Image 1 (tube, rainbow, N blue to C red):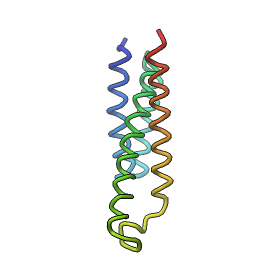
Image 2 (image 1 turned 45 degrees about the vertical axis):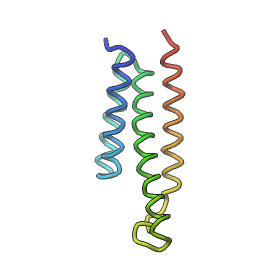
Image 3 (image 1 turned 180 degrees about the vertical axis):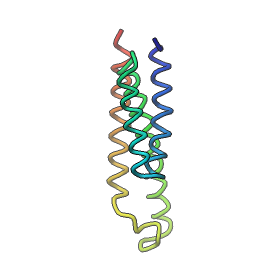
Length: 112
């Protein structure tokens, strides 16, 4: 059985990889996320694993969407980088996933 910290770190790494895969490959990245979620459900330390997955996914998504918003703001409206819709929504969703990961982490660390 893995320790809580090991399960959290492995899942956080998987969350980062799956977020980058989702942003780069779309549906194939979503399949990778689904596989990691199923894997997290099967480990002994489920709370830690889900918390790490949420942290990795939320942090990577927040950074990616915030960087895009920053580039769009510096390029000016109407530029090619600003034509993709839903950037603000993506940032909000990623931030909410990150906050959920922080809350899950605090619960996972408290449980014995």
